Length: 137
Image (cartoon, rainbow, N blue to C red):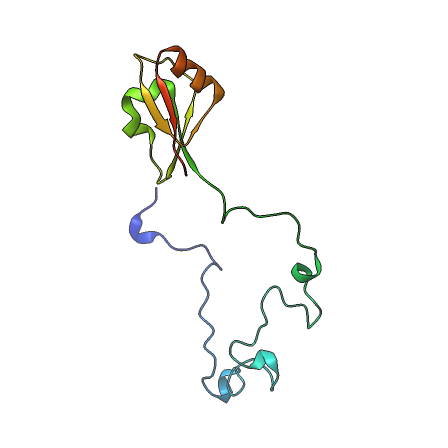
């Protein structure tokens, strides 16, 4: 049975912090275990994980590949015909452009305005007697 007042850390798991620069008799005075002069004797004296001694680092030696389209891509708020009655819930995420997909059924003869329509969505809306209006982006 353990008692809370008798709990102790495992033997060897606790270490005293190494205190450097506390006089010559401490064993870590004067240069504080850093040696004499040079890069590593100074604070901030490391070059970082990508530094390769002045050699052109790997990330610069390898060729760049591909094309990144993220600055120019257009993001659409996508919703289906089955969601036409609750369109406010479908447009979310801050997308400015709207695309209508053809999943679901059309109720009545709606006039739907959006930036893009799938072919099946167009056919279903027009078959129901509705009207498709394509907005300019």
